[in-house]
Amino acid sequence: MKENEDIYIATAFFSDIDFIKKAIDKNCNIKLIVRISLATSMQRLKEISEMNNVNIRFFTSNKFHPKLYIFGNSIAFIGSSNLTQSGLKSNQEINISIESENTIFDDLQSLFDEYWEQAEVLDNNYIQKFIEIEEKYYDIYRNLNNYQNDIKEIKECEFENITIVGKKKQSKEATFISDFKKKYQLFFKQL
Image 1 (spheres, one colour):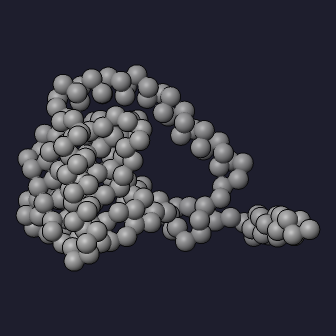
Image 2 (cartoon, helix red, strand yellow):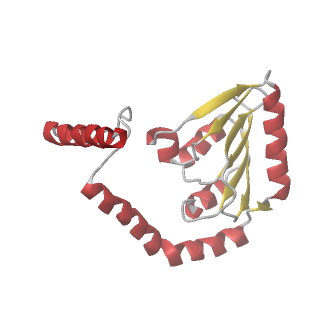
Image 3 (cartoon, helix red, strand yellow):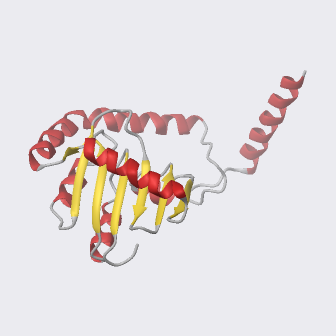
């Protein structure tokens, strides 16, 4: 992120206000397109909507699921990272960078422009209505998180190269059993 840069972001989910604050501190102009869903924090959107240099538009369709970040006329990133704390800092995500010399860069800018033209402006009226809906369904969303925690209680299985501070290491016995099951499965698949 460079000083006074135009930043264009199209992402399905949003909650990372720190990223936006850093961009504002560098006097960047931000165009943000998000999908309104329970995975997008309306309170955080409300907070950044009041900041200078931030323009927000939205879609409500579940089909809007891009992760596109364009920084000025120099580089773009596409991949799997939403603009959330976990998407940027702790999830196992895959993203690639596209330099401006690559012809795909212009295509990505055009795609963003198409999204921007079709998306609705997120104004205070919409924000208030969406906050009311978010509050109505918050318990359901929390229960979905509880669902994932219940699954992990049976067996936590994460990609190994993720380093998460405070994560408990699996015991040697549990590692042995897991490895044995994997070999056993492969053995019987070959028969």
